[in-house]
Amino acid sequence: QPFNRSALCFHSHTSVFVSCRTLPESPRWLYSQGQTERAEEVLQHMALRNGNNANKLILQRVGSAKPGNRGNRRAGVLQLVVHPVLRLRTMVLMYVWYACSLVYYGLTLGASETSGSRFINVSMYGLVELPAYPLCIYFINKNWAGRRKSM
Image (cartoon, rainbow, N blue to C red; front, side, top):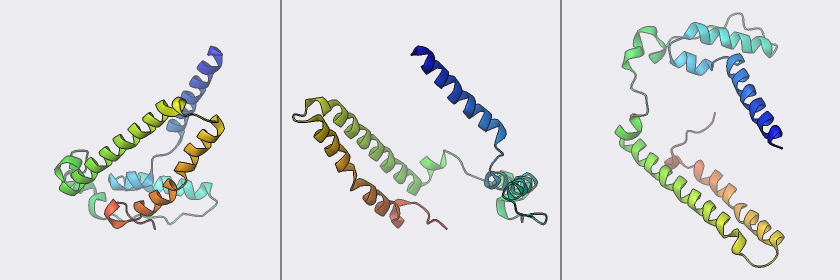
């Protein structure tokens, strides 16, 4: 059994390493960093892999994607503290994450204390989560939640 675990661990790490080396960089990230030519190459490679002809693929240089504009950007982790809206949202999300972790931890520890059938108890734990998914979807799509609408 220890051999199976170590083999599984080795193969999972190896597959992550291989995929990191073989997958191309995100064209969106390359474009935002001002590497328009590399982004075009990656997009052409993706188009060829999908069976499309992308010979005339040219990205426009706008805003921060211009090579001379790299110094003007203020993005980073520090913006979570400096910007008041991001600071508030970060604090709220940290509190919610902490509260949810404590609830799951408490439920896990208290699972052995419940009386009755184990099968009914486990099904009740699963049944409690069913309304949580539609509620999460509903609240995530609210404007005050901070998530941009999908295209």
